[in-house]
Image 1 (cartoon, rainbow, N blue to C red):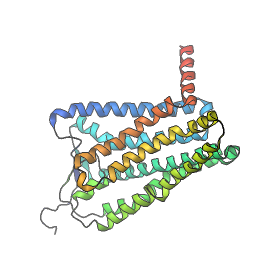
Image 2 (cartoon, helix red, strand yellow; image 1 turned 135 degrees about the vertical axis):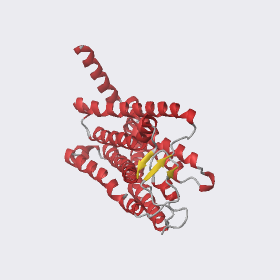
Image 3 (spheres, one colour; image 1 turned 30 degrees about the vertical axis):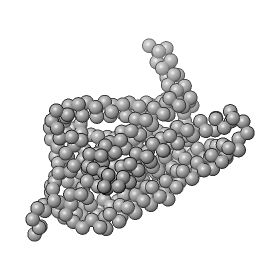
Image 4 (cartoon, helix red, strand yellow; image 1 turned 180 degrees about the horizontal axis):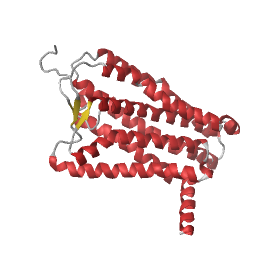
Length: 314
């Protein structure tokens, strides 16, 4: 029998961003607006890539994959806020919660993996331009993208399997706006020592350690060296311009993740954890298409060509 105050659960209750009734409508409208912006910005990149052959290069191919990950991750994490308000039901079945947790963790890792591949792409373009097209063939790009997508769904399996093995919970209320592994660990009455070790190992080694953190930032050491060696200032600006958008996205992503997971417990509250999680969920998916659209001449040119074509047709 289960000890007192411990219970098996068939469902969880998602508390959400706030429990104040007066804030539910403003939160719903804000999240809906954010999701529409995320969907519109990233789908624009996907549509432009499909319609404009001048964007059919490795860099934009990986950018499309990054946009697909951003949309998927945002959908997985934000949809419960929207459905909670529309349906007035904050409950989520146990299995659905586990699936959401698994997909969010896997897609988060996929994003880091794709950004690491994009770093390698920028390294070849700047440091070995003569070999770039010989190395980054269509087949190689597809394989790199496939491996990036699959790796996340495999690496996050061990901690998810351990969570599925939990036998009881002190409460069935999750103080978060979606099913994430940390708030679920906080309400279980099982021993989580092994799970904590695996989570630290998975996040520390595969997420922030050798892969993909090492593979993301190491190429930039060689890129910076190569840029410094360029004799003309115009050449240095052009070389830096080709990787500035990607570097901006990478720095912002790692900063938000660091605030979320590496803030000392003594200075971290439940509400601050929600805030960091929200920033991680919505900041990069919104900024990513903006950065690549506003800072990238090829992307803006493709947008202008499509707009002119639409104007001509109408």
